[in-house]
Length: 599
Figure 1 (cartoon, rainbow, N blue to C red):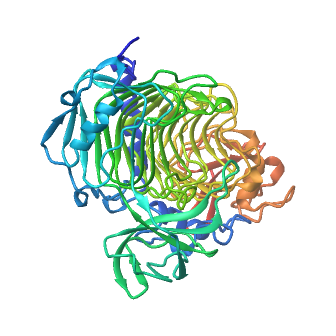
Figure 2: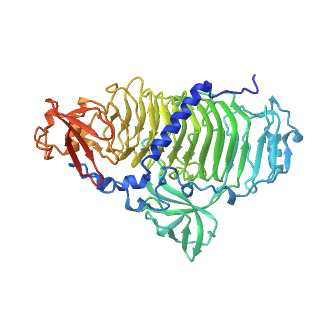
Figure 3: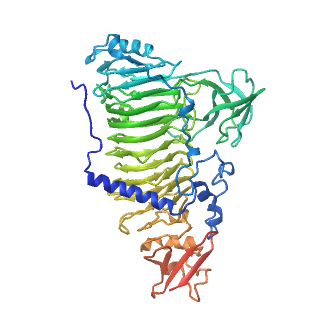
């Protein structure tokens, strides 16, 4: 048996690494060109949509979310995430002391074969409020649970780690929850206070989970609306929250008082399952944090797992960095090899750096775990994935959200997968980054999604087999400053039945919609489009042309009908030409004014 196996998840030449970093930088530059925030982009939809019948439907972006300081995340003037939107709250959580406790002093064997579970549990108990130092490779058959009263550091020295030889969570850290209490007022979106039937159990600085019986749209699992909040003030039965309610919760709203477990840091270590595959293989997550404050996982090397690498649920803050390799993707046998799974009402969790290789999803959101009173509750809120986290050789979607999720921010760095990035949640922002090597879709905006923004992302060499670069079935979405350097007509660039608007300085050759009548094409700074006769119907919709009739647009004395629209290559605007060779440059200004100039 191998006790320690180090993986090189990059396995790429320095030359290719440099090339990918350059493309990531290009995405950042492209995003910064427009200098518009995500919310301002969505806000301008109604004003810009005055082209034919492309006006956005009512409620496209809830009024309570537009520009709200703590509503859906915005981008700053350089198209970066403002620090206030993803606060580093680690300073307010207790830290373990530097005093060291060595696991080897508690009767552990450390040969990777003897069962060291009980000895490590004793060592962890002694390390409460301190730093447990692990210097050997230990086999365990039960979960290790750090103190729920004091912060704890667990440091694995080089060559040390855990071999998990049972279907259990290796390190499990969970706080507690009380009984649900009825909310009598304040559960509407935008509210910063709640009136509850009994506030006696709440104190300023404590936490609660707000939940309701309103269900999320998730075909695979029953999940209810909810959010995690800290109480900043109490006056009678009125509780003031540190964040406004971000979605309406009208049906039987309740609050659950919760005590979040203190901070735990897992630093380094080699982790694996002895039985990661098959009908009887292990399915549990490696590391699990529920109802916890700022769990921190850094520098781990986890491989050959039958379940998720890291699962967090109802967590405030926290971060992950490390390498996740060979996580079993076998749903028929219950193996869901998610790299980092952020669930429940978790907020502000960050995936900082590392790799996910041969996993189902490098990152995903999901339903809540923890005690039954908060199980299957919540939208993970404004969590963040950095482009320093690379997903490669993935087996499904590289970076993903399930229906659970609100305002999460993902900077994609994906070089693989059936689908590069996938969104099924609400108001997700994909900011900058690069997606390459996808075989079906570069991006899939699912029908459950609303308000998706893909801003400044480069799609390179995707897809290579079938599908389209972007499948947009979601109810609303925006592509802004998107770069897709594909040969024209290779595959449809955008397909699906959703409403998607293309904005900014996007470069989208082979611009082809499988259901063009449902899409809008709006220009802020103009865009580049290559020749594609399949766009005729889109141009008809764009300019408000009646089918087969003359355009109401004055083309400097000429006329343009649906039957003679064609495209020519252009830069910064649309260029149309008729069969007699007459060309017109079409621009769409802010506010929706359309100009056609014969050239």
